[in-house]
Image 1 (cartoon, rainbow, N blue to C red):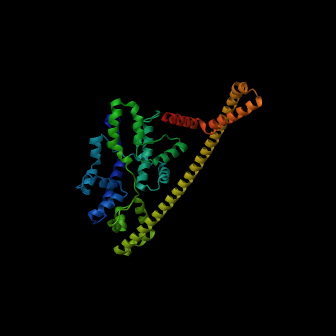
Image 2: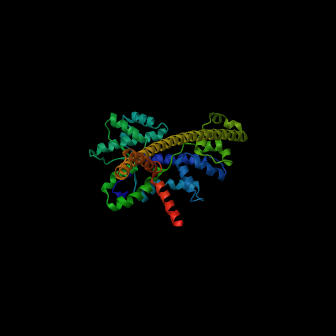
Image 3: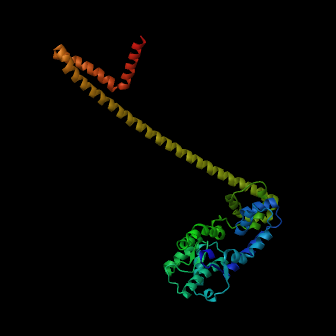
Length: 383
């Protein structure tokens, strides 16, 4: 963090929460018991514990990595943070924050914002929201952008912040890493802003982009659906439906492995049959909608063709009529009347000639005339 010119510290509360999480994950992993390696790898894929899932991801590049070595290294997190990222630990206790009269009420709001949070995490978040208020008051921090922030990847705290802003007129205490770096960027040199910030963000905060999974305990998962993993590859939706089966939850301990396996197999077949039925219904609905769209487009095409035919016919009538009038005037006034002398006969022949030319141009168009003329010329040349 020295590259960014900021001081980033971890509170004792957060350090203890990390230690508690490490201990819980270690116990969860060990409680899986004696599970064959091929089944263990599948179980690790589906568990909801972030540390166990991280271990499973590292196994892809480090197949020989042992769980004890993985957890043992993480237990030295304070040293890693200090040496690699220049993040120290603030060892002050801040009793005045813990005894704040708003602690219980704020904890209730945090719990309502995310009911899945454990009591320890609720207390941790509440403490840090009030801690930022306390540190800002001690620093007389009335600047537009406060100097103290609670840096977190927990987006659910934004709900709590909105409530505090409305009812307590409190400025936000939390900030997400990506927002924090955007706030910092205008004050950094171009080199740091363009290159080093990305590296720091990737090293420190990339877990923010790790997809979340339901909180399924490995030991429970192993006992409940372990037999089913031997012969099928389950997706997360199927896992959640199997785990959520109330009958299985209540009776699986007394059913025996064979009966559990039969029940799981039948349940999985039922799940997949229903999924297939939904997919077929959706496919049928998509097909029906597609047919409706094709019919609509066909109607539009017919309408366009009809309008085109109407316009073409009108154009032919106009062209034929125009040619008829022109030929009638020319043949009557300038050719037949001077030649024949009788107006009635001249007019009759002029009308006949005009009708022929009008028909040829209006209904056969000049393309037909040119084709016939070309045939006539070709015939003459052939002879």
